Image 1 (cartoon, rainbow, N blue to C red):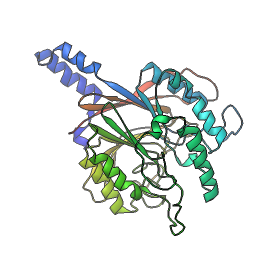
Image 2 (image 1 turned 135 degrees about the vertical axis):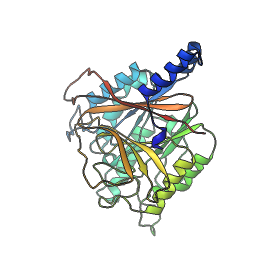
Image 3 (image 1 turned 90 degrees about the horizontal axis):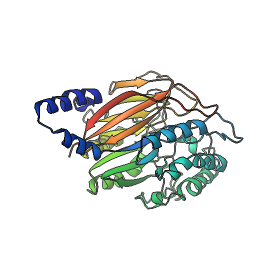
Amino acid sequence: MTDNVITRRSFLTHVSGFALAAGLIPATALQAASQKTWSFGIIPDTQWKPVKEPPFTGVAIHVIDAINKEFIRQKVDLVLAAGDMVDFASPEAFRTRMRHNKSLNDAGIPFYPLRGNHDYKDDNDEKELESLRDYQQIVLQPLSRVNACSSPQLANAKGLTYAFTHQGIKFIMLDTFVLKSTDPECEDKWGIADYLPWLQEQLETKDYEQAIIFAHKNLVGMKHKDNLFSDDDENQNSFPEVQNRFYRLLCESHVPVYFSGHDHMYNHSVVTSPDGRSSVHQVICGSASHKFYEPKPPYLDRQKTINQELNRIGFVIGHVMADRLIVDYHSTEPFGERESNPAWVVRNSFEIPFKS
């Protein structure tokens, strides 16, 4: 997969520049192609310091407002959340988070949420159910577009994991923070293995041109060692057969990238399955919070980091073109105690060609 990564600058300089100079691609053709480009924004973890009183209620309100302003300025088609929208799941926190999407709503930009580990209570099953219902009613229910998406038919999981298609791109949002089954004989929570049949169906149904996968937890983390497949923070190779199947599904379907949050840093890497047969680009989308983490060993040999940035507030914009995805990571110095109009800088940019 690494051979298919093209930096944005080198592509524009060496391909477009050469082709124009040689008369191979008319400028009007390039202009027409660029007009077909559209983009989506990804806002990473937005929990704030555990202040439960207004106006924050554990939500990074000023950071959210500033990032949404930039999304609107750049005219993204839609915005996706990478989880951990609030610091502690509560009706007040969820309402605060959704209120600060007003600028997106006014601009007609849809918002597609995804839970993280901070967006549910895990003290006991009763509290988990309480936070789940709050999330469904306050966050999901107003978003009729989410309810209309495809979702696995698993107990208590309605609308949490879902897929939707926009301009030929299928976005698959994986939420594994789900309650135990309602079956009293079942002691296990739903995990990624339970979603694999649905995921395979989504990827095999050719109602899209390219698919992109989102989840809060990483395939392989830089700081956190728990991941999409297991809460085990000691062993990132847990459930190797499930991991191998997941990676294989993504590769067979030519999924160009897996986006995640959780680690509160920006990290672009290529991650390979435990059996060494499949690999995928992973982007940990940064931090829109007061928290910033440092990488922590041990690191897996099957993860190759390409670019990384620490200790800045950031977000990602994906630019979809006919034959490739351009990923731009924007960041600025930490802020958030008060309203701000930061200067965003593109710190990393790369391209991944689409495969059919």
